[in-house]
Every structure is written in C-alpha cells, then in structure tokens.
Image (cartoon, rainbow, N blue to C red; front, side, top):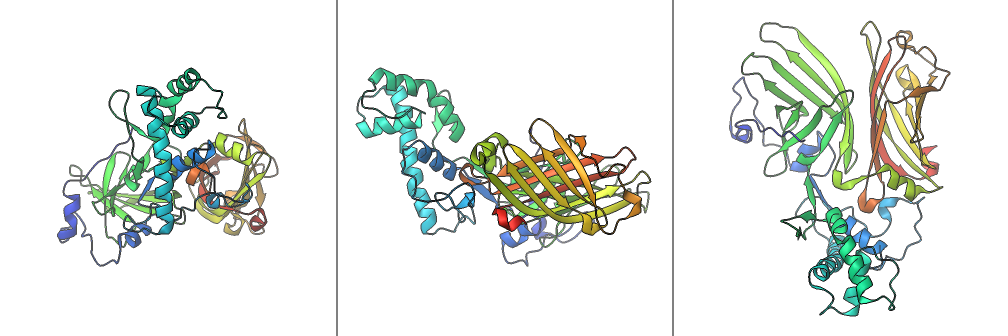
Length: 425
C-alpha cells in the first residue's frame, strides 16, 4: 500500500520566509525540470501509449514499421521512436504526433472488441471484426472462421486484454484513455528493509518533498537534494540527503543519508540506505526479458555506489562501473569497486539461485577484507528490475547486499542503460 503524506502548509512555503522550523523554497531556478534533476533524472510523468501500440503491432492490427532491428540493437529504437514522449507536457513534435495517430488506430480496435462483446458482430465491417478478433488474442485470421468462433474468442479474452492496457471503470466498463503515472507514484524500495521513498510534487510537478518510512520531509531549497523535518512533540530534527544516478528516464538508483539530531543533544547520528525503483508502467518482467533475449545476449552498462562496513562499524564508501549481461535466462552483474580499495564483485543469478564472488583490487583497504574472496558463494541478496518503452528493456536498476562470516558487509545500488556488446568491454 502506498503511504502519501502531505505536510501541512507544504505548498505555501514558496511564499514564506524562513522561520527556523522550516526552510524557504526559492524561485530562482530556471525550470521545474532543472530543479527535479538535482534529485532524479526520471521523467515527471509517463503513459502507456507506446505499450498499447506495441501490442497492436504484435497481433497485426497495426503494421510494424519496416526495420532490420534485432535484439542485439538498441531496444528503444525498435518500432516507433519515443524519446520525446512523456517529456515536458507542452512539448510536441512530429514523432509525438505519429505516436498519437498510431495510438488512435489501436484504440479503435480495442473499442470495437469491447462493443462486439457487448452487442455482437452486427454493424461491423469485416476489417473491424478481424482487428477486434486479433486484439482479443485470436490466432491467425481466416475467412473460414465462423461468427460463433469469433464471438467466443472475444468473449473469453476481452476483459484480460482491457485490464492490461486500460483502467477499469464501473462494473464491466473501461476508461479508454492512456494509463498514466506521475513521479509521485514511483516507489523507491530501500535496501534491507520494507520502507519506500516517494516524492511529493506541487501542481507544476516540481519535487517539493519526500515521504520516507511514512514520514514527510520538506525540501530545503529548489536547488538542493536535501529534505528536512522536525518532530513537533520531541523537537528531533532529521535531514535526508538523496544522491541518485540521475541518468535514466524511467528508473533510478542511489543512496540516501539520514542525519538525526535530538533536541536535547548536539550529537548527530547518520545512517545510509541504498534504493532503486521506477515507473510501474515501464517495468518489464524478467520472464519477458528472457523471451526477448532468447539465446542472444543483452548488455547494459552504468555505475554503482555502495558502502562497506566491518564489525567495528568502520565504513568504506565504494563507487565504480556496473555492467549486466542477460543471456539464456541468467543475469551476470559486475560491480567494479576495485578503484575504491576494495573488490570487483560478480553476482550471477540463474533465476533459480544466486552466487557472489570477489576479485581483489591492486590496492586494498585491509580493514574490509572478506574471508573467502576466491570462492563463488551461495547468495540471495540481489534484486534487479528492467524498464523501457514498448516492453523493450532499455534500463536496469538493482540493489545488492552481502554479509560475510567475519562481519564485513556490503550494501550497493546500481543501474545503467542498454548498450551494444562491444561497448561493455
């Protein structure tokens, strides 16, 4: 369940001066996009028009654009280009207009399928009936199909198809409009607990605060990535700083620091948490990624950040490159932390099991050694998710946690973009 909390007077802070219990949100930044980009690079909103179009193309209702693209090419470039979709709400160009036209063609077939279910085949042309049948998941169209066979197929499948792409209305009705999500709908799952990080937006889609562990925090400035709250009862002040990658469209990953200072003490305690998440509308299940990849290889390249802690509570920040290879249903993630005086970490997930191994760097911090770096150890601490347009993975994000038998532990977040095999070398 999502927990969205709105701080009293939050949206009024723009017009108020600092009072000591809150901070002024300035108005000297050029655009909402620039302000939000200081926290996350994700788009402020998305819809599922491209996914509707892709399904219609896959069943033959809309002609698939001529292309020689294969799974080894950039999946985001297969079919209709969509980089401008879901950008700023006022941006439109020829690509977006083309998307709109194709979406209306697909929408007609969905509506006809529903109306045939409700009222039967009478009054529809052969092409309309054919497209409705195909949208309902019918097998290859044939003029030998009887009216009963067509009607039965539509009656059996229409609800499942509509539920996937449209929002249910009242009983046995659907709202035939694109599904949409805003940045405020995105949940960033925190590593090692069940908490989530969500964003609070104003009417202009600018990030004004965050919710964390069911508590609301006010953004300290529209140029900052820092959020603040004060407990009205205890006087305890908490400051949260969000450091995300900021380089992906539909997902993000990163680290947050949470500094707590009690009213009766000058001491501040700080903890670090790592997170990853993205838009549900652009999420692609691992099983679908496996189908897309088949026996071929999908490769992604990006960055990783993390923190290592030993049994004495000493810590070591780690940063480096990250790559992911998906082949024959197996994910192989490489996290290059050797430049941070630690190990390069390899995690292999076959879908049935995970294993982790460590390769020491040239220079190592001897306070943070694992006990068996040369072994591949059984493991279950990695979670990876994929995102992209039209069901084609163009981004991945993930988290990983590991605790050694000697008390050394690692928490990390990572992610990146689809790339060609040669560019991952």
